[in-house]
Length: 212
Image 1 (spheres, rainbow, N blue to C red):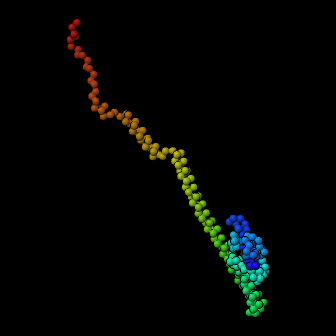
Image 2: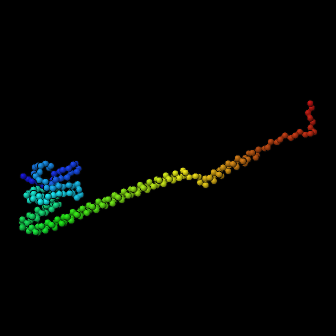
Image 3: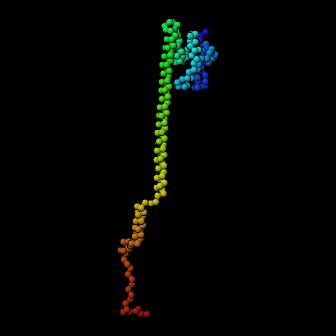
């Protein structure tokens, strides 16, 4: 029986997470399995991995073949390097103490890489937050400036509507009224040129009265 270390899908649509299982290669992907040895959630950044290190190492030593994704997970967790070092001990390349030293050194380097990645992600999140806040502040300032300009225009219109006439306009109105009055009082040129009607002269004393 060929044994595989693979993923079994769980969760809802677009919110899937996976169980790391040991199963018969002939069984369906989400079907029966022999043993569950961990969990894998790719929705987080970085991905969340829960793995039983000793069980995974034991199944690899017993001949279980991991899928491509599970191989990457096992390598990330150091299971593959541990298996390689133990095989070197069996072949007599080095002893257990050397294998342990090399494994611990590798784990420290791996943890440094993981921590650097997490720090980079946190910094990128902070930078993104600062950028979004700056853009939001810019939009709010533009809205406030537009609102202040609109209120100033409304206030100017209201002030112009309630403000009395200016002195210049009043003086022009007074001059116009004075000219109208003077026009009514002064005689026109035609009136000056019109001849005055002569009154009839009284009859002379020596004129004879008409006969009756």
